[in-house]
Image 1: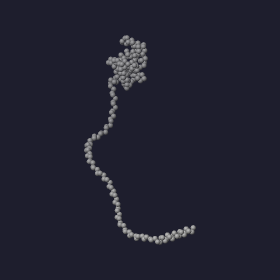
Image 2: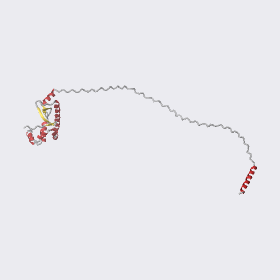
Image 3: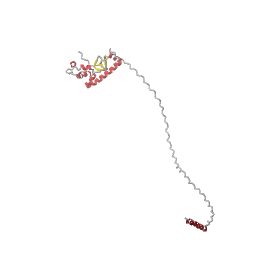
Length: 238
């Protein structure tokens, strides 16, 4: 334990002695530092900013010569259309003496107005025209709707047909049905007729006649049934 300190002390003395005998190096005198020449500061040149490219000059387009406008035509000013003039109501046709005479002899003592007379005459003459076509074609079925029920019933009976058969100027013709009566009596008796006027027996019973200089021939009788004029075939007088 005591040996260690002694050794340590001895070692320290040796180190101190050695240090003293070591020559110390004198540092060389410091050289005078010459001032460094000033380097001029070079200011970096800024890069020139490129100018924007110039747009190419446009070649001026040649001026278009405008075509001269055509001279304005003088448009005639339209005059306002005149207001439509309402035509005056046609004056009532004056009744001729002939028409007045026909009206008088047609109605007789029956009280029928002139308007009713004209209307009835037009209807009856139209029916007669239609019957003329039917008789020409001898179309029995088309004929039936023009005959009133009373006549069809009477002339469908054998006894009545027999009476008519006996009075016929042509002998030998047999009348057995209403169709026979239509074919052999009704049609032949009216084929050459020229009906021009009517005669009122009453306001619902009319005769259609052909006016001749000396007489009036009766070719049709009409009865008004349910507002319609139908042909009536009178029964045979005993």
